[in-house]
Length: 213
Image (cartoon, rainbow, N blue to C red):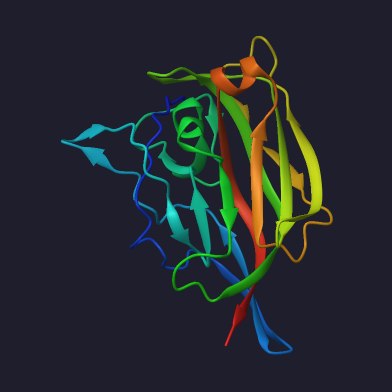
């Protein structure tokens, strides 16, 4: 079944229950925990029973903080881009971009995370305007850059391609090589048209956090 997507950004203050926690071990004075963040336990939200297009980022979730990245649910409305794990995905678009840079970071109030390693993620893009996010998958190019103490550690660009006749597409898996020892990852959609006409969606972020005692 095809579904349309409405972008919904929700506060993450109460969304920190672990969805999937993998291996846990000790590294020196730090405890390492691997997460597979699917965002399916995060509330995408409704306003008076109607899908809302809000401007509030997810916030703290699974030991990291999400700036200008919101939760989107296929239970609300659907898209031609299939979530890797239904019902929820993470995303940003022209509305979120206007609020600031989409990024994931370890430094926030009450954070226990010293740094983190990004291993992989799934992503794709659909058409977006100031008013709506439609169901058509579109080609896109997203550059993601990892930092530690404001020093660039790694950078790569992921490319998503959708056939012209595609109505429904699968997300693309991206292996993040060299993205270790980070305190921040920044996402940027390449091209003026791309940045204003696309919504970028993510799912199943696989990463390891290093927690302070």
